[in-house]
Length: 264
Image 1 (cartoon, helix red, strand yellow):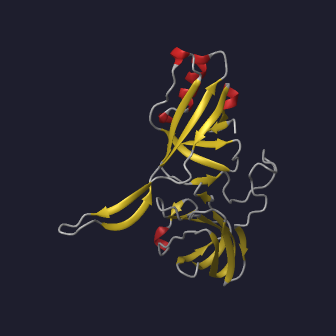
Image 2 (cartoon, rainbow, N blue to C red):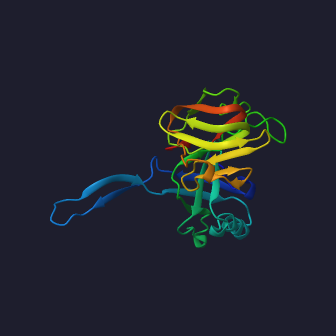
Image 3 (tube, rainbow, N blue to C red):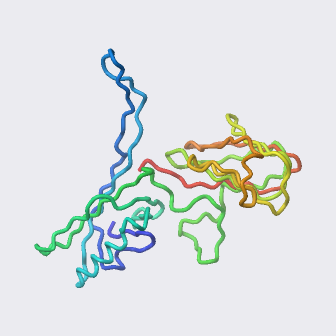
């Protein structure tokens, strides 16, 4: 561990060395309680995780101290929004974080150590690559975290066909389900919930069901098609989830696209 990437920029290229990092094994917890008048104690409605804090300890190596600090300030500028943080010894995981707090250093003593506080509003660590199908070429090569053969892309040619997706992360994921091809009156079920989409789509059409709780959208060729669905969306808990697909004359590719999420 001696390097960190911020939005694709490795700090070593700026003559900055990563000397320490503070990442708690779990985020802090927040209790959800209500005090009821006349009753001792509180009513507990369970606990949830708070945002996760990260601390980076950096060492300025170059001769141009002020210039390097200026580059560092521009890199972590809060106006850039959430940053993608990747550590060289954890190349398959990314941390989405923003600068929060105060960047501390003391130039009067010649100290070249700088502490950078970060916070992950979504506390879960993600896989660098999602499960979307990729092929070699266009700058992609083996060993760069790309899935050459995705285990989340399936040809669907018969009604009643089943597919199984294995979420190897340690947290629940909310996938983007992409259907490319033709069918009439679609149903997708995970044995607990069923998503339906009425009517027909053609061979060149693309239907996308975004199960992100902040989105929950259904789009056909980019246009809103929520009214043709029953508004059911899926989640992928850790482990295997089996989907059953029913439709009239199905001939499409089903992609279940998501990032693995980890506790740590």
